[in-house]
Image (cartoon, rainbow over all chains, first blue to last red; front, side, top):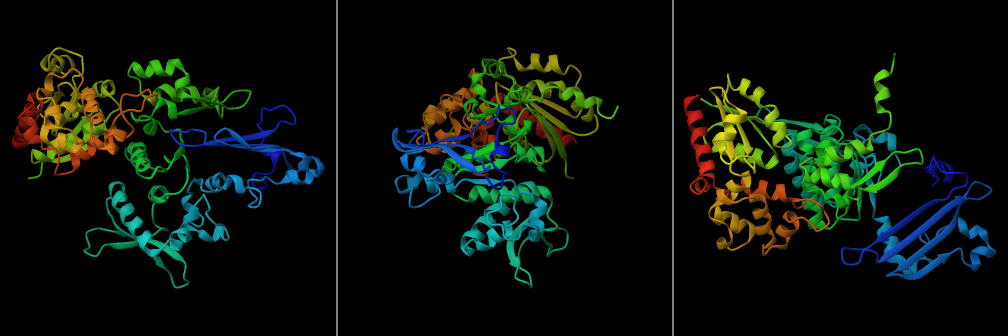
Length: 320
Length: 200
């Protein structure tokens, strides 16, 4: 909350005054979609500090926790902290608390990977500030195995790249080195400083996918990538997901990504801008989209026009 | 001398099939234009035909349910063909060409060979046949990848294309020359491709 500037900056822009911010999570698998349920509703107190309006946990439909309780009412200061974050209060739903900490958000900014000095002190930086440090912290055997399979996959997109390794410079800082093959028999070594944006982003994406932890949130994986590389990404996600069971959530504007015929209508959420805030709808809740697909229209052609900002055509008049 | 053949196809699976056929015919695959479906491909056909006036080109489209026979279809879309243009039609979809190598497909999908249809060109909907075959696979990973989930609203599973790409590009699986003995449209495509490479 602090990082995002408190309740008032997280609130829906279109909301009326004093609206709450609510997060509701259901965790489960295909057989039991709601093994765990968690809800957190927040607002702010008179000192503009975040204050809990409701915290709720259920396991298999049975209530475990409902706040505010009588203790909270006696001592409102308690409402500045969730039970979820406190180990002595979350014993009964520790599995859920641990699971939520495994969610990773990734949006590699190539320039931050190249200049780690900008992100000193950050750990698990979603923008890649400590990406090289993360690589260095991984046990040698795991890291080398992953780098081998990544360089195998990267060969498709960057055919000249033959080898990838992690090396330390004289100051001990880790660097990614790649061997590029050319007409000289020994090739040339380059580091992350020289890698293209696309290579770095794809590398970060593949690394994160091999990390078999919790759900992975990816922001616009299409950035800097060749459309012909992009087309294979949904299929790649599907195969990795089958193997590791890891859930991948992707935000995108890319028609190349959305053209994949294996993407289910029940897994596409459309973010539709409106005067009352952004509405989130499942693609298969629109009969028209279902019919367009039946008629041979691609998923991208069917959904992208619905997410277009109103009055986008006004941009044509800019500058006149 | 190395012969480079450019191409245009409907989708990702067709691309790898065409690349494989070009190298099987002894040539090198140049740029392959992957369009998103048949209508987009046919729209650009005049451009590809123009390019084929100076260098060899192959365009492969699925016949689907469009016409009764391939020659009629060919005549309608490309009445005047450039000398170096090879405009081939898969009857009815490129999946038929893969089904035509029955033994290897059965092995790849882990189904009995007897389940794989013999007359691959008389199948009304080869893609559906491929998915039905995959749904009978003994391997769970094949079923998960290729068969659409109920509720997905789609005709294919999440990694259907990538599985078949694997079947085509892994050297020890699909054999174009064996498949061609069982499939006329593939056989004539291969023969014409070899002819084009030989004469260039």
